[in-house]
Image (tube, one colour):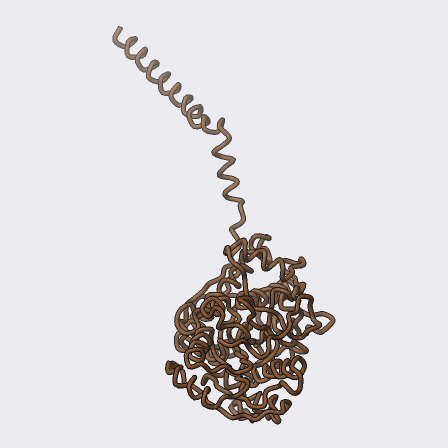
Length: 454
């Protein structure tokens, strides 16, 4: 009996174990009946990794003496990058603008350029504002064989060093800017009303010194890439085209603040026309305020900065009659390209207003045009390699240019544009009007001369 009972218990235990073993596959198969988790896992496993962004490094003066223009350059760059990304990016990749504030300081600029190239490993560099910062920064990019497109560094010496990776996105070097106001005077002012005496007052700055050298016809010496010196003669100078005598010359140093004394000296000289190459809108505002304070009223004033709306807002009616050369004007509706499609100056103005809630100006348009040009180069070559891009840009011609909201660009071996002219503008009743040349675009206003008194 015990033996039979033992046999029965054993049979029950074996049966229980067998049933338990049979039950396990059913339990593990249950999730397989639910397809969603397996399908989701498969999708994640086969997804391609997100494309790494094309990184563009730019060191800009967001603070310090060049901050007004620096922040505007940032906005122009950013708008262009945003429009590229809205259209799907570039080469199948998003574009990222990496902005660093160089505080208008040379050493900070150099450190940031080194970091962009050697640490951040950016794909592209977009240039900064001013010859003062660009001259040393371009030595770093040249050594690294990095393409260096420049929005605002006009001194000829930047381009006369035998460098291969520079390309400038404004009409010409500063030494040749003076041709535009001089030709404006000759063409728009009756011969018997043209200035008989001229005053020159300028900043001790690459840009301002270069403009003065071109006006006076000075020799300018540059240090080439190989360490040798090169002298370029600008004789006889643009002022030689006027029947006028220079009766005052004064340069002011960096950090200058004694504007009233300078203005009093200018008043004492009492020249008919003042050429005042300044480095920033702030300097231009300070000088005009001082001229107004001492009551010096020349018949005409030319300044190399002052196209910014802040200039007009700060000075009000005192800005009336002041002329400034420009690379861009709202009425100059050039037709450019962006994302492989037509993109005109008016489209830039509309896009800028939509993004920032205010009107775009020259200091935003210039960097935007630079971004347009480099985007065209990258798209055409399907590359971000600096040597490939520079070769493509260097191969542009009048028949096959880079097309921007500043017009068409093609360059010489120095990276300076060929056959590009400046526009002359003048503040009139709170607006910066287009006054010269008179036959380029509709909407040109007559030149105010003599300049209205303060």
